[in-house]
Image (tube, rainbow, N blue to C red; front, side, top):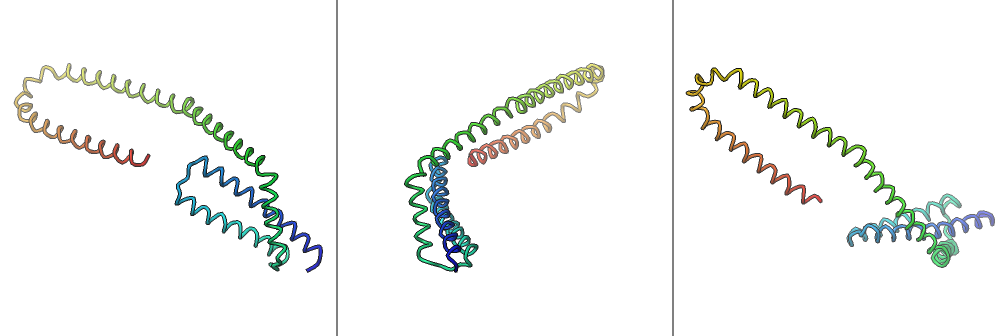
Length: 191
């Protein structure tokens, strides 16, 4: 391995240690910001160190075909320590500011969606539903008006159908209540 390759690899290892520090700060801000559960933090810790190892050894393999030297690990540790000594605070502020800006943008877009799409759609739906109800009332009033002379002929049939029909309607209402209760219970579990 030439001296130039060794210096290049040393610089890459220093940079990878610095980058590992940035990723660690990003991860720390994420865990505090989103209140991640303890068991998930352990899993993410494992993934973090695996990704870090793959990064370091991938760069090492790319730069000098994977020849390990002790001072490469010293360079990784040195990059990591220098990052935490001099660059961690500004990077943490930048990451927090980035999350704050992204959060503001997300809430702005959600509010914009609510105001420009959801509310007008809800207004149109309610208007169409009321219009359909008015049309239905008008149609039933016209049908009652037309059929009113024949109602006296239907009284015997109505007397027999009414108890049967009311039982079916009550069963249907009970089924709808059960479905609504099941839906609300499962929806509350999901939140």
